[in-house]
Amino acid sequence: MLSMGYARGTVCRMPILTRKDEGRGTVQCIREMHIGIPIERLGDIEDFYRGVLGLRPWPTACQISGGWGVGEARCGVLFEFRHDPRVEPMRRRLALTVPGLDAVAKRLGGRNWPFVRRRGLGYSDHCILVADPVGHLVELRQSRPL
Image (cartoon, rainbow, N blue to C red; front, side, top):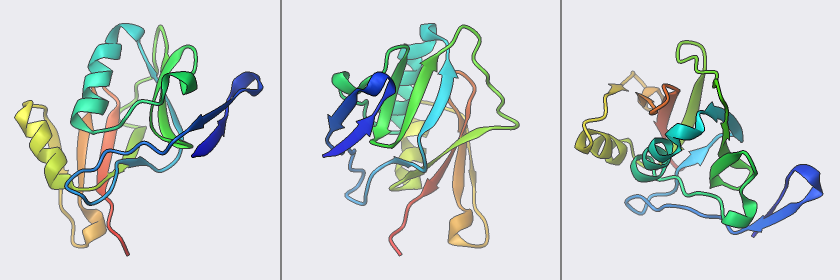
């Protein structure tokens, strides 16, 4: 159980929620992120981040008014409902680590979702670049135990 402090002095106690992918780990955000989305696109965002990437939503008691939170405690993503969200795919991106790039590529391909897979000289240079339904650029890298 982890405790998270939120606005107005409330504290949410939430278990660490994870999605096992091929038994190798969980999807993680490097640090807590706040991303603007139009509320009309919440269904598309939920489908992409839950169905394709495998992030779990925060428990109802931990959700913050005016947004929708997913991922691990203190390392999750808060989608803030905005009338005119700031989407800059050429300047900003959300970086996530995933248990396996192959599994994510398979889910993206199964939905005919366009993405770019990059392979570099070193293992840490491998990644997938994909745009979410609103247009935010998401960089996915595979987590590996050292």
